[in-house]
Amino acid sequence: MLDAPYFLSQYNSFKATALKNRYITNAHIEPLLASLTNRFSRTILGTSESGLPIHALQIGTGTKRILIWSQMHGNESTTTKAIFDLFNYFELADSKALLEACTLFIIPILNPDGAEAYTRLNKNQVDLNRDAQALTQSESKILRTSFESFKPHFCFNMHGQRTIFSAGNTPNSAVLSFLSPSENKEQSLTITRQKSMEIIQHMNSTLQPYLTNQIGRYDDGFNDNCVGDYFQCNGTPTVLFEAGHFPKDYSREVTRKYMALALISAIDFIANNPVSGAAYKPYFDIPENDKNFYDVIVRNALLNPSKPGVYNDIGIQHTEVLESFVVLFKPKVVFVGDLTQKYGHMEIDANFKVVSHPNFEVLSIGNEIDFIMKEFTKIPLFINNNLIQALFLLCNFY
Figure 1 (spheres, rainbow, N blue to C red):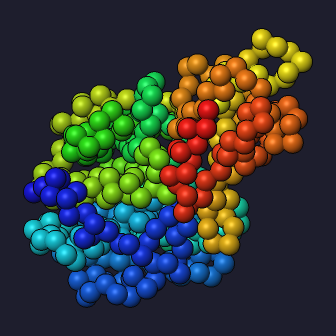
Figure 2: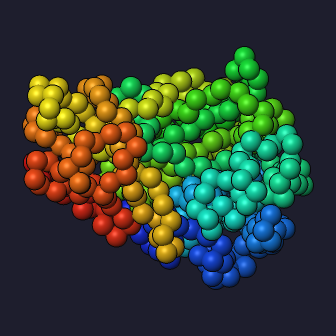
């Protein structure tokens, strides 16, 4: 049985430190794949639309089969890092009983073209998570073939979510979110869904001591073009994992740790329990995700000196941009108005002073800026993968 406190205390010994920050491609994982022991069976399932290899691994000898895939969206890499942490756990920890109960088939990067370009879509600008029925793309066909040949009892669909999400209508960021996808438009509580819910409620119970009120439940609107919905429709309990934002963790190195714990918790639960679906009800105690956050909120700002007494809040979101193989975060003004019911991962109180564009023009929606002017003081807004903490030091400028 999993000892969660022990796992977290030993996490740094399991962590795949060669994988860090947000840009993760085949070039990053292939040396790690080559270094794995013969406990893993490695294969190339085929190639992407541009001809890049799609790697897969199998480990375990058990009768309970779990299919796991990550980076279906190429710019959602946190779960890939967690998967390689999981591989190290299997190599270094006592996982004999778990791997005698389960067999895992894992595709670390399903969309290597999107990973290279750091984009959600594949080479042909197709969202693979909307291609479950049409199967127009080679990556979609490879996943379907893997599903049909491996015949999993459970599927784990690994994704990443934006910084906007809160765990319910709260000031708590949704660090992790989960979903048992619907099987129909009526969102019926089928046995298959209940089995997925049972796994999720177990993960939530495991993680709450460490992520108290920071776990959300994803929207369960039905779309059978989505892979998770399709597999669930076909009778295989499928769990959606979403890696979100931990405070001050734009590189998602903290999030990956808890995602790794979620993964091993789910696998351990399947290994040691029948997963009948009977214990599904606590799933609904997990709050549904809300959109309560901006990356930065500047409050009480006088935007136009010609209109004294008219104050606004400014909502800023970071756009992720790949430059020289590093993901940078570019601030963009996306809202001007009243944000009293919203929260910022960083908040700046302008104290009713003039806040302007760097060239001293009036700020407006759509402005892409690295800093704002508070009267004549520069307040930087940008971050990058090596200066994560700098973002939060800026709060001292006012």
